[in-house]
Amino acid sequence: MRRLMSSVILSALVLGGCWPAVAQEKSDSPKEEAKSGPRESTEQLQVKVTYTEYDGEKKVKIFPFVLLVSLRNGPPSEIRVGTRTPIATSAEASASQYQYIDVGTNVDCRARKLSDGVYALWLDFDRSWVDGDVFVIVQKIPGPPLDNSVGKFAQPIIRRFRSENDFNIREGQTLETIVGTDPVSGRVGKIEVSITVIK
Figure 1 (cartoon, rainbow, N blue to C red):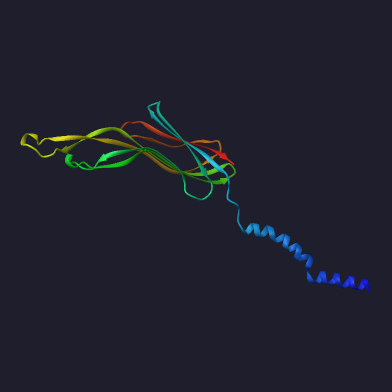
Figure 2: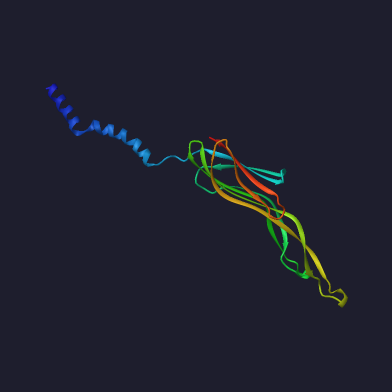
């Protein structure tokens, strides 16, 4: 009798599929993880951007910038440094009006990983600076006939160097991404980029 009951119970377990069900539950868990997609990378890049200005063969200016850039989707990392410079918008001395504009350096950077040790970078570099001034004629306040001359107001001359590009770079590599020559001064501006991976 005991042997008969044991055989019946064993047959029920096999036919009911209890054992395969347990195995199926274990095998389904990796599939569910795969469906959830790969986890976002926790790596970050320390991106060093160096702007160097040359007068002939002589380096006259060097401006280094360092950004910490995440490999996750999101807004770019950015740097804003400089001053606000007043610009006169009215030619009448009796009603002077000014507009302030940003003068300095803006750096924006995005990054994504292509393969082991290789990264794609998007870099927007925008530098402006005051390079002297120019006198603008303004009309003086009306007065006596002998005092109807004109006056002068010094307006700043603002120069600009801007570059926006995409490129691939390897960890530890220093890459010269852009070279530009100022048509007025003849000075040459160069941008170099290097990265360090932070895990």
